[in-house]
Amino acid sequence: MALCNAATLQTATLGCVLVCVLSYLYLNGNVGGPEANPLPSQHTKRLLARNQLPSKTACTCSPGSAQLKDFLPPDSEELLKRRAKELQQHKARTQSVLSTLLYAPSNSPLQYPIQGFKVRPMTPTFIPGLALHAEQRSNYTVSLEVSEGVLRTTIPAKGVQVNVTGNGESRLMVESSSLEALNELLADVSYTSTIYHIHTGDLATFQFEDHEAVFPITIKQPQPPVLYDMGKDINSQVTITTKTFLRYLELNVLLKTIREFYKDIEIIIADDSIKPEKITGPHIQHFIMPQAKGWFAGRNLAVSQVTTKYFLWVDDDFLFTKLTKIEEMVKVMEAVPELDVLGGKVQGDQFYFSLIYEEGDEVEGGCMYRMSRGRYRSLPGYPECSLVSGVVNFFLARTDAVQRVGFDPQLKKVAHSEFFMDGLGSLMVATCGHVSVSHQARLKHKDTKLYEEFRYPPKSDETSKLQLHFFKNHLKCIKYG
Image (cartoon, rainbow, N blue to C red; front, side):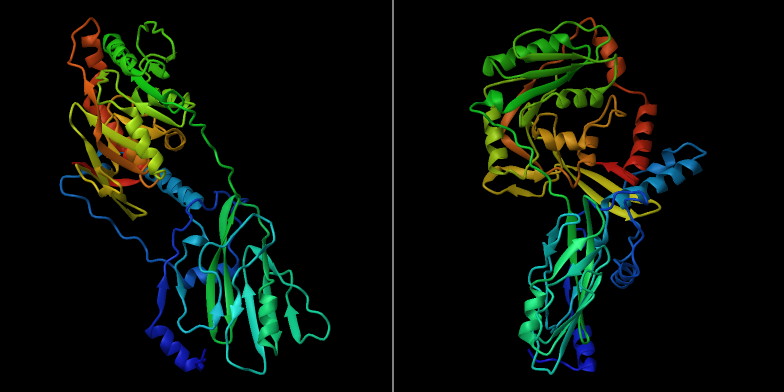
């Protein structure tokens, strides 16, 4: 490849830079704390300063959004300070040098890995693909520099015209009059991180004359898989879960309809009723909670006890019908293993929504808009299904994925979308129209009045929920469409 002189190279680089966006490849980066996050080296500081991502700007609230600052208590200065501190700690846990914006130099003779180079912490690993492609010269000199590790290559035998400087250090220089000999040594260069971290990274600088390239190194502790034995039938694949409060009449109707179609499937009930009644029967687990602990606390309890790969969430006043075909939902989830949650219809209504979220700046926070009936695209191979952000209270879910997100027990009475807000960017969600469940007619019984007192919260509960979004989700505004 023909080489340019320095002036020509600078002009060409400015004129035809190819942008290779490697930002946010791996977002579970440095865990907070000075011991886990040593101060960046001068080499890293220099790279970060040169390749800094543009600062985030304030997001735009959708018309009609609730401005969450308006719901804060009058004296909220300390609250704002705690919120800012928590955001910085969150960033320390989820960002690393692997978020740096890197540029691929044009017309470069340097060959190097641009993506996918992973090493185990403190374990020597050969850097794949390192090479120099240059025209004939009397001498070739290349250098490699890293921040969080050391570089090594083989020491050349006597008589070979190769000089290696910095072997076992953070900066390695290789010089030779033979391009072939130099490339042989580059093929033997290994990287060893000098810090222990389960998921962080390093940036390597590769130089030859006026050419310079930077590539990422992912330092990651491999994770053993957690696998579920699907067994031979639906009973070993799915657990049905529900939460109940003062609605035993409805719950017993639900259980009766489940047993019409699934005689031996496991059912888990979380119950925070004021005067618990006993629910018995084969393949039923009934967990009694402290009184009125709330909707999401009960969901957490029920899902925590699931041992199957999937669980089906249902409300305690649903009805199974011949269209409640759990096997059809499992079939979709198994065919599209990236999916985490799959919703269906309730009483003929396929409710779903999309979440439009802008991160915003560090001071005010982000903007969230829940768009009802918003969907992204059809699920490939399943035209009756669409990718969305959230679904109704009838869904099949991957147990381990939902357990990682969890249900915030601070939300006691009215909550559902909030789970999908917490799982945004973590859970892949879809909705399908070919599986449905029915809904019981509203029944009047001895606990109806007491139930409604708990079911419909005062305005103060809604204010508390908005305050929670302001702090926990770092939101500036939210709109439920």
